[in-house]
Amino acid sequence: MNKEEIVRILKCDDEKEIKALFERASGIRRQVQGDKIFAYGFVYFTTYCRNNCNFCYFRRSNDIGRYRKTEEEVLALSKALVDSGVNLIDLTMGEDPLYHSEEFETVLRIIRKLKEMGTSVMISPGVVPDEIIDRFKEAGADIFALYQETHNRELFRKLRKDQDYDERMHAKLHARDCGMFIEEGILSGVGETPEDVADSLLTMGEIGARQVRVMSFVPQPGSPMENVRTPDRMEELKIIALMRILYPDALIPASLDVDGIAGLKDRIDAGANLITSIIPPKSGLMGVANSVMDVDEGGRTVEEASEILRSMGLRIATDKEFKEFL
Ligand code: SF4
Image 1 (spheres, rainbow, N blue to C red):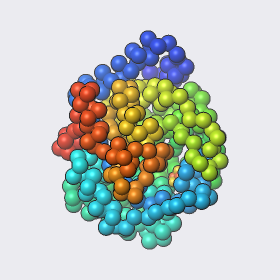
Image 2 (cartoon, helix red, strand yellow):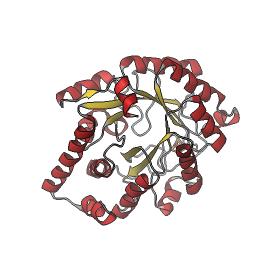
Image 3 (cartoon, protein in one colour):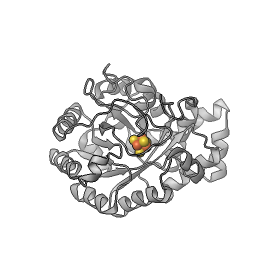
Image 4 (spheres, rainbow, N blue to C red):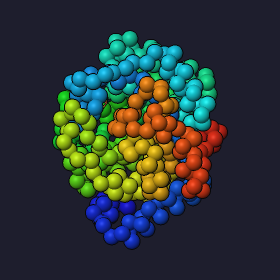
């Protein structure tokens, strides 16, 4: 699929064609991995951040309640998630100055202990120096996540205020070059054009991302973009389908963070093959986009997700199956 074809599909509003697109994408997913869907536990262990991204609730200037979980808390929450059946722990942090000052020793220890527990680990640390990325790899991290959000440099400057496009891309490519899988991701509904989306989708392949993601923008109270409307979900669903068709064996998340558990089925039907943002209820942990939606109600659990998958003739993969896939 070339850029013109991707743009044409993104602009298409013919119901029959869109239905066929989703059928093709979910058919490819079934061909590649049968009835298995992967599940990631989300441990957003510090919501402190030195950055001021215009779309983010946790941006430095937002006057909000923040938390920083201790090492023991992170390990206990991760164990509970693993015991509940997730295939991987996604350790996510804002660019917290505390961890930068101690050179990530606590985070490295957590990764090592999680690996001793036998689980796969994804680390989402923001932009960090190459030496630290090397040490994440040595500690055993499997996937390194760092989303550009857009590959249009002008739009990037508006979204990720005072941050460097090339520095961010460099960190991601360094992680790839030292042997980790990398995740690339974009935001939908932040002023991008269909051409921008097509460029992003093609870039994901060019940089060798094994996990590719799109999430719809959700306006965050107190942020400069709080009055920007959340986009129609059709754009996100079409992008998921296009990613599946372009990259048949990619890991493509259906995030519970945008529309909660109610948004799971549509994303899987569009070709996603993994569920992200599974969070233990009443853990004090938050998501990112819709940070508390369905969390304490127990909506974001393996149990709830499994029930929906069962009704679709699908199931959560075993740990062995996930490791074989990786
Ligand atoms: S998106 Fe990430 S880096 Fe940007 S302000 Fe939010 S937590 Fe910080």
